[in-house]
Image (cartoon, rainbow over all chains, first blue to last red; front, top):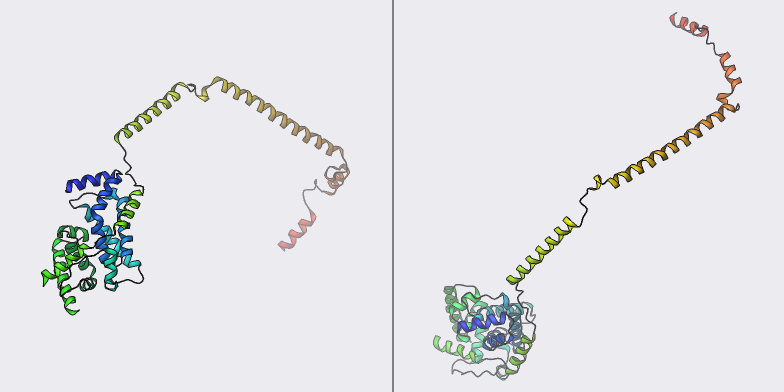
Length: 179
Length: 151
């Protein structure tokens, strides 16, 4: 699988748009999910996701395989794009301010609701976490990345990722219990 | 509790982009011109080397065979030309000098002939000569003055 991805990246670096198209199809959902949970608005999430892949395509020659999947590089671009987004945004919109219906309609979310905790509660609790904690929870449990990949994306050690993850879950529980 | 929480968080993985957005964005991204890496293949280095070598050979050929082997300072034609030019220069300078001389002599003669010019007027010179007591070695006035000083 990794070799196949390597081959696609090499082809894309030589200008093969079809190869990059395959990478786009594979990674767009994860990147979009990460971005929308960070910015909370569908239009912004679409703009940023588009920007991430545009940057990746224009700078693909700068990417070098160093034992991590191509997605690590994409997540790093996405993470920087989100940081820039919040830096320039005058009136940040919290994810818990978006009506659940609009998210459901626009993003076609079909979540299995638990009796005790609804989607709203999780989203609201997620926005109350610190930036790194948010990133790790989304990458680890929503996008199912390994600790090694998360560590590489966030430029941290795996140990640090585990510690932040533990604290983030603790914080989440705390926020849910309060709400 | 933690398991339930994680299960709930995992539920967010159902979020996905709108298919129409995905299609549109994909075509826009891939439609954008890809900046290809500027490769410099080995054969291009070899080609540059050959071109440079040819240039050096051609330049050397022209320098060796197409230019005069005689130095400019030892060229007999040049030397003769320079020598001729030198003779002409000397003659011109002599002519100019003689012209100046002639003018000076003629103007001096004109002055001598002209008695109105004060410092060459003969009668004036004669009267000045008489007034001057050249023959007498002593001067009475000077003697008187010296005596006054000594007394």
